[in-house]
Image 1: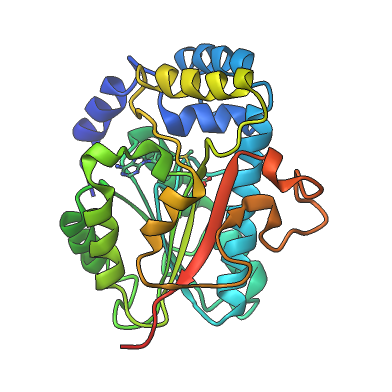
Image 2: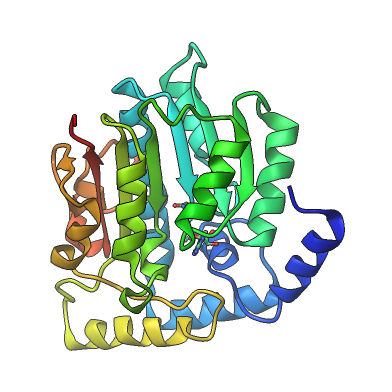
Amino acid sequence: MIGHDEALRAVESSLDRPSAARVYDYFLGGTTNYAIDREFAEKVRQRIPLISDYCRTSRQFLGRAVRRCAELGVTQFLDIGSGLPTEGNVHDVADRARPSRDTRVLYVDNEPIALAHSTLLLADTADPARHQALAADFMRPADLWRRVRASGLLDLRQPVALVINAVMHFVKDEDDPDTVLDFYRRSLAPGSLLVLSQMTNENPRSDEERQALIDLVDYYQGTTNPAQLRPTAEFARFFGDWELLEPGLVYAPAWHPDSATVFAAAPSQSRVIGGVGRKPSA
Ligand SMILES: C[S@@+](CC[C@H](N)C(=O)[O-])C[C@H]1O[C@@H](n2cnc3c(N)ncnc32)[C@H](O)[C@@H]1O
């Protein structure tokens, strides 16, 4: 755990630019955001009018994917880039899917305000023996793994559902996400599941939309989280040689939609792709 002064310094130093976690919270209708985040979010909305629906699509995919992982018998969840707590938190979904309450969830984020709120929410409403949050950087996998191990919450010899939802579009190819993902895939036990989604620039409906998506990436250059959108063929590599569960890597609303799924009638309008992979037996 980081100390009080360190946490305060981290929070203060994160308020000079919009943060992806807080902007996403705003798009989802949350209140854990600041004027700098809201101004930025409204500038994005001018350019991408359906941005809140895309965020909701990501969040809904997360819920359906976690539910499916729990139904398949995986009881341990590691949610990296977990963001600010909001409706449909992983531990709530997992508990609903497995009323025996045998699931454990470890939340990880490197955004100080997201972490502070996750810690408070868990302290108030969750089960500290089964739910914890810690600060770590997805891009420093060995350090992150050490912290996960030190938490003692997850048995890393058993399958884990690794959730990296709506995070990869904040990791640019020049920062070598392939080596990072490879580390996580190698470190997990056979039978583990990998939940991945990100925003895509595939098949824009018009030149106007193509340009709007380029502008979106440009805007995020000025935040704490520069972005990179990817078409499906580029994103698929993050699953490595893991087998994809049905229906594969698809537009997120096409992944086991339910009655609440936004864009269920026209998944390719969602701008979000996602899938779940399973680590084969050795
Ligand atoms: C759009 S939010 C997604 C939140 C949540 N996963 C969801 O799907 O609702 C992206 C999150 O990724 C986190 N993030 C981005 N880069 C990260 C990194 N290198 N290490 C840890 N978290 C990171 C941000 O702080 C933010 O909370």
